[in-house]
Amino acid sequence: MELPLVYVLNGPNLNMLGMRQPEIYGQATLDDVEQICIQNAEQAEIAIDFRQTNDEGELVSWIQECRGRAKGIIINAGAYSHTSIAILDALLSVELPVIEVHISNIYRRESFRHHSYVSQAAMGVICGFGLQGYALALAAIANLILEEDS
Image (cartoon, rainbow, N blue to C red; front, top):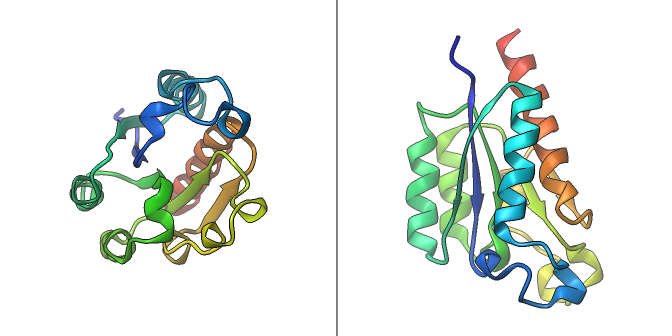
């Protein structure tokens, strides 16, 4: 039996985890995030396609690729969350469950981070729980897929 596929998409500067503002994002790296996702995906009996890009257009293309291929999307669009209508439009166009993740609590930071275009396409938003947010998002999307398939 083929496991349902979930894309875990990461936007700009997430490749700098562990080096960039460790007082906000911690010491863990993007490789650590991927390992957390792999372990939690196995437990949830889903397959993941884990990716990171600093390019908005590439992120849009990956989202579009999900249509007809994936059962859901987990996205940490980084700063694009607050600026990209193109990513919002792509997420809406694929008609899949979306969970938005932020490592930090965006509502305890600069006011420009308080608005997210991605949130308008997301079934839920998980922020402020560090890397654990990805594990929570995987559990949530697995439940959404299970409900949809029932």
